[in-house]
Length: 432
View (cartoon, one colour):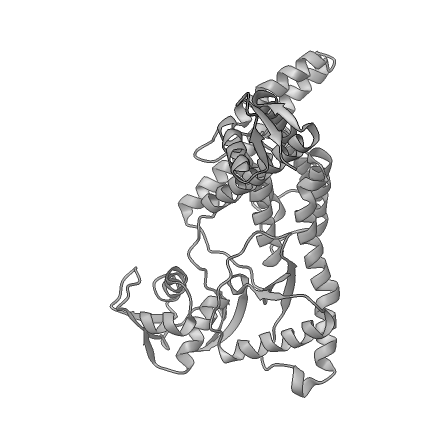
């Protein structure tokens, strides 16, 4: 299967307010201070104690204690992933040379060794990597590959396989798919080339974070683009299914305001919303929702960004900072700005909760697999021995909760993978 993104030229994401920026800066400073602290004590162990293994163990144990404590409502795994994101994206607050970036990445990966929730770091890092790649925010491809190599050495090939797949997908799109698509269209310009310029990035489903599929009712200008690419893809790749993830799309739309035309950099949802007003002067909230065929929260986010935020591309009656079912919207022809190109951000969405839920779900699968793998090879095991072996297998990625293991054992018994011994309820047997 493959996943799609419409035009990826404009950077996505919403701007943060001053307090969020200050908080992010504090988090960056915290990770930087931890790195410096580690450097300091590592130097002590090397210079003063001749790299004695006893002192190395003491340093490891000390850092494991505080690196696995929450900091201001965030885990160290999340803070490290955010620190890397800031280091690797364009416009980073960390103004460092290439060598300094490499050295810092090396130190971050070294700190990761002390963190027990490595799978949580991997998921946060993967989601931030996806935004850097899809919205062209990555500052340097070499640094992206370099940290993946370091993580692979530290945590194993399985840890980075999905991330490496993501980087490869983007390289394939840039070097293969886009040139091939352009060549295919140029072979019959009149029939194949749509009126709108567009780019498509093909993503391999298994590598990327899970994106919610929504059946957006596309404007006719975009339908033509989608149909054209489908014809190309089906002609070149057999037995592959395309799923279009419109939520990741970005558009450049030229808006004809009274004062002057302005180019808007907006999401596909925002563009679909604005293009409705080419056909009519005003629409109610319910009419917009019905025509776009989107869930309530996505329509509210799009309309809020276009009528209640910094750039009021649409006027709203009654005026206000919230979107209600009875609101009426119309195109604001009087809108103007000193710039000829503006980016209209969507309100930010807190993805932390979903990321943690995704990791919890993956952990359940990992525990199930470890239990079945252990029982398949051992056939019969007492409860305590089984739990110890499962913990030992999973310790590299996360510290499994004993209650969770017990719960997964009960679930596997219910699904006929295991059974309790008839004479001793604390002994489990594997069912082939």
